[in-house]
Length: 176
Image (cartoon, rainbow, N blue to C red; front, side, top):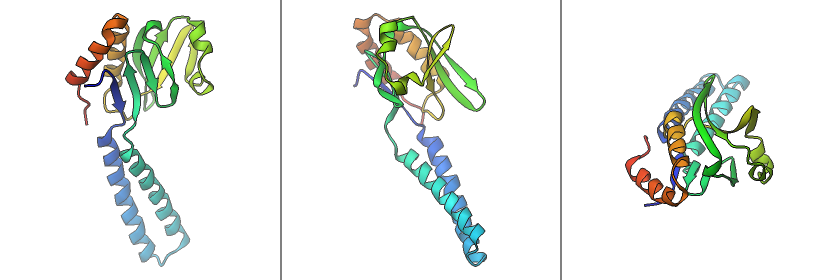
């Protein structure tokens, strides 16, 4: 078993959206024939075709959105940046509107922050202490579960993290 936990996009939610927009696509094509191919029907069919394609790509995407590794956390939005466990003081799940986020409160490790890429810097927020933000919408596990596991891993000594991640990977299967 891998000593890394991969958190992926929820295939169940993507499948539901794919089925819903696929149904809308079928209805829009039927309207296209019923209305003798008028411009409004073409626009409607095109919009639903695009949405169906987007959700098909999301459903087929099996790349991890967030990876919890022995050396730190890696996000798909900034794959070249690893957030080291040693700088994490706290983590929490936040909901803003319909979106969920995982906030990591980190120490003032200036060397690490200076080494971050520009794409990773866009994820940073300054509000008193340093925070690293992960978008946690449409994942195969809840934001609260992920935040709790992140904090748990951050408190474990570095030499024990790989074994913990291996054990957690076996005992914490993703919800589909």
